[in-house]
Image 1 (cartoon, rainbow, N blue to C red):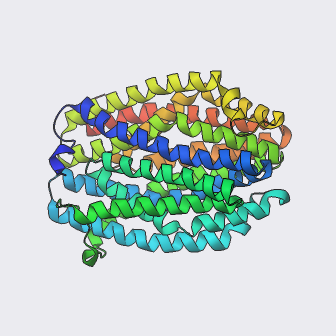
Image 2: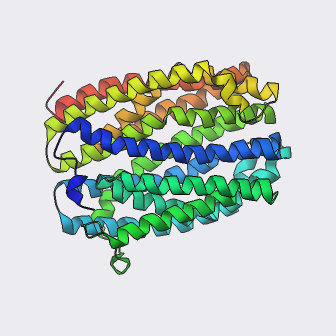
Image 3: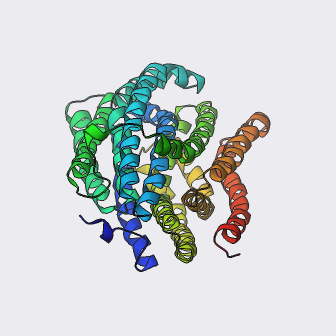
Length: 447
């Protein structure tokens, strides 16, 4: 594997971004698929309460993983800049600093996930009839934290170099493994929710081992050498500079989602299951956002390191436009086929009604969340990680919580939860329109 074939500072801009984004898209599809398969199998082979229990854990899992993954993204920005500048020595230092931080964060995530899960679920007003299953699911899931964190750190290193193909191969293998183990543990061995969590843990370990093997054997500047793992002060400072805002951004979004989940929990297990199924489906619609966001962050970071501003301007326009176009199509499909998609998870009429209501309201506004996430990725690549953090903190956390604490107390209706997402997506999109115009003029010399 030669670095030159993945370097994004040279060659056709559209082709480079697409070649990076397509494997990410396919890989994220498989990852979302095996996450969804957990819910499909749990909802159909166990019961609706088990589906609600798994759904109720999602926001807490996302909160925990978002915090530590923010540092992995920060490391990716730093490594990409070193690679773009062709600075092999600093690339190696940044890689091994990132791996060292990942090992520390793995331990923290394991301890927090296992010991604080019951307390957090209680804070979220999780119903008593699903509490035990939710706790058991989380404790098994977080026992594999080292695989979750280190896999994302390793993949971040590869993607910083422009390589999104190998992570795709490993995700496909991991996803298929997860599905087979789900069916084996739950369908054959009749395990409860622990079976779904255990299947996820084993598949994550497999993908971590595969990507680590590649990094150990490459001859490029980002090669992993276990004896070289140490904390380089300058690179660690840069990783924290980019990683902390990104981590906090992910955390505040998921913290607000936890608060919203606690509001949803007040409507009972059927609402939890229905809206949880809708969120799983929505994850597929947002795959283009994830793919182009990752591609743009790497593209902009490498070209900032190489000081190629015209490429950055063209890449921004292409990435934003492509994401918007795909989400218009995805939103239309989700709106039209919402009943059929929700029915895959459970056939109870009330669960289907809850899920269809949320899906059809949110699907009309997918293009806005896509614009916000893609603009956020551009800002990180430009070395401005604080802006996305502040925008998401205000628009996607404070505003959502304020609405629930005010309007939610007067209008106790599940439709409020459904509409709160499009409302805040609209707010952040307006802010980013003005921000991108300003930052483009200041940093890239264009209005």
